[in-house]
Image: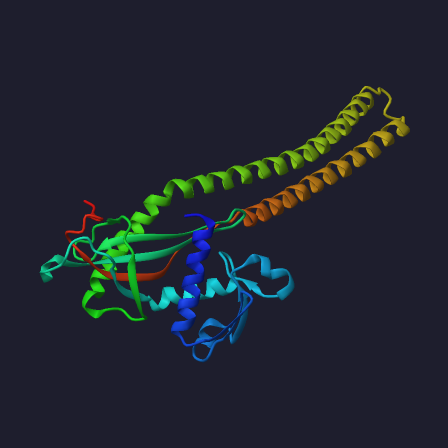
Length: 305
């Protein structure tokens, strides 16, 4: 599904939902002005909204673009997940005439909005069809379903819907596994590159401090050896120089340790920032369901084993 198809489905979903809850909708030059009445204004946290589905209208109109990632679309998706919308319908233009009731069966189409959100974004609307009697996946070719909006769940197929949903979401994850794995592999590769760069940079600073500390220590050891070789300890000036150097060496050593500890703390802070930066979530949002009648003998429809 390309971006145009996704945007078309988003537009259809948003407008259908707003009409179903009796919103006041005005359209002017591809800009929608919407007034949302209670209780939906409270539930959706919007009383009025100005939006468009056309990105070219944004600059001069100060309105929200309804597209994957938009705040209002996110609200609608989450609300629909809670209420579980069901659309009733049937497949148009059946190729086989139905004369017996037993030939009629029920299928359900689940509409999922998949959103990977983080340093990389990926979104997709995916349809999964399931036979309500057998809970088996279905393959529909060139089949158009005529909908009738009813925001309710049919009681007599409630359990069937639940079992079919489990089949659909499991299949959805299998279908998208390779794509999702590729996205997360790219994210992990970028994250590791940034971590390695930060780790190398901090390690260089620590190595420089340790080299400086080693040089100071070597100078002290040389001075210490000279002092030990002084046969006449009455030469206080030489011994005092040694004591002063030892004190400076200890101060320098402690200062180096403090600096290294500070660098390690700063390094960990950078790692934490990188971890938050590359934190990624994936959501399989159910945005709607469509129960439909179909002819068991329709050769455009296959129930998969």
